[in-house]
Length: 322
Image 1: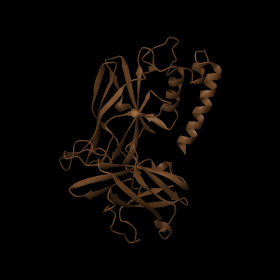
Image 2 (image 1 turned 90 degrees about the horizontal axis):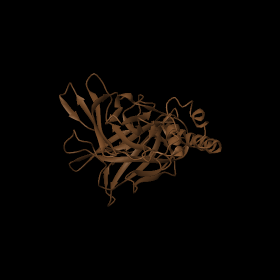
Image 3 (image 1 turned 30 degrees about the vertical axis):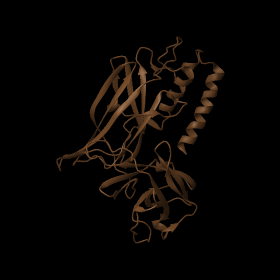
């Protein structure tokens, strides 16, 4: 819902931008006095044009995403790289990460850059061990409307605590220049009590993770539901990449506070070309929902979710609230 509102806002603001002229003196007034970003009059082949630059600025300053300052870095003193997330915070389960590269001399958003090697690692101090978590290791263009914004994601298994801490590292490059951002301690918050957006299951000798994408965007009625299926790496300190295997994830939503009543017209999550799983989820009213999962392999055999809980539904489920 927030993204729909924001996209409408972007369209409206973009119209104002074109009416006033991309190179006019009013541009700086439109984007808030130009104190943070300027639209240069001279063409710079490395940087976005005025429209692209404005859209990137508007997206990264929309109030929904904020910078994570500890992940900021520079490349050869020529570029500044910033990393953003929802509210500038991270939590257990799925998180979007957004990257933007700024040319220091002109303060223009750079169009072409690469983010690779994204590696989150939890150090469990009391247990004397480390492990990673499901993640995208490379950032891709978030949306063709924002060529200067790259997106990746991380799904954290647990929160930061006295018993352990998370660090995140990545590599950035542009114009044959590069930097490696050293492992930096980040704060990962717990979800509200009772919510669960990340679940695991075993198949054969492997452990898989089901990361529910942005359940805070769900509303009553039919929702597009998305998830990633990741496979634990042999070396548990290495990122858990999306699984090569193909699954089908059948879903049944129930309301535990309303006698476990369900809701019809749900469609299983199936693998898309992008690597994400997608289906349809019908939520008939606001409240707490368990989304029960039955995972099947490509041949239709159940590999997870066959056991039932006290409600009679699969004991493997996400828990969300709308």
